[in-house]
Image (cartoon, rainbow, N blue to C red; front, side):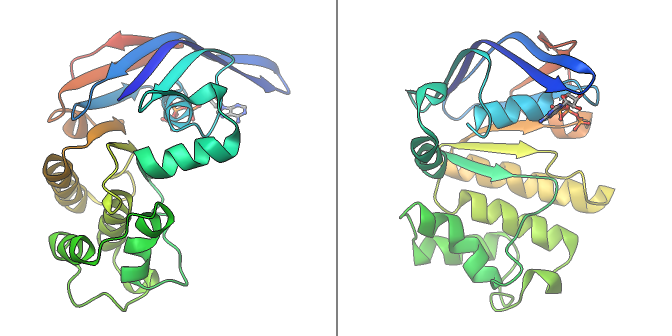
Length: 221
Ligand SMILES: Nc1ncnc2c1ncn2[C@@H]1O[C@H](COP(=O)(O)OP(=O)(O)OP(=O)(O)O)[C@@H](O)[C@H]1O
């Protein structure tokens, strides 16, 4: 589903080159789940952005859904992202001017995979029934993140990438949102890569890897 082979990434900063990823390789098979942990600044979000084709490696190969991401021009990478990926971030990134139902169906519409029955099912599973015509600002933080998860899963992507998806929520809400996310991932059978600082988030996943000094290590959650 997703493979990184010998990936290197260095950022140019005013203080000089900053080596963030060094010879990083990982494989995520269809339907598998993986937590990516590591200290703040260890390069977790950088790796996730590379996996999503939002940024490019300096060296190495990234394969998403059988295609070499780094060899594609940006419009083709964007198409691949729409077809293969759901993305969830710590900040919910909902569209404030769109209603709940239109936010939910946005990605699916862009991917030409909109399905009204599936959208209705998701609204129910997300606990947002009756709130379809509300706007994001009329939802709680937990409801907004549930909607962002639903939006990412509405096109039924084979892979969901999530960067600290519960990082903005209080402990109880975070646990509820995580449980819902994992349950929807099981239902849709998509693969999952979560970047997290939280051992509670990592624990239920199949595998946990840790980034340290640019390298990827096996880790117990
Ligand atoms: N576009 C960029 N230009 C320059 N430096 C960058 C850029 N993006 C990230 N960095 C730097 O690369 C390093 C890794 O950043 P990254 O956001 O991947 O870490 P992280 O492990 O996700 O951190 P956190 O857990 O705090 O979110 C940091 O030192 C960061 O300042």
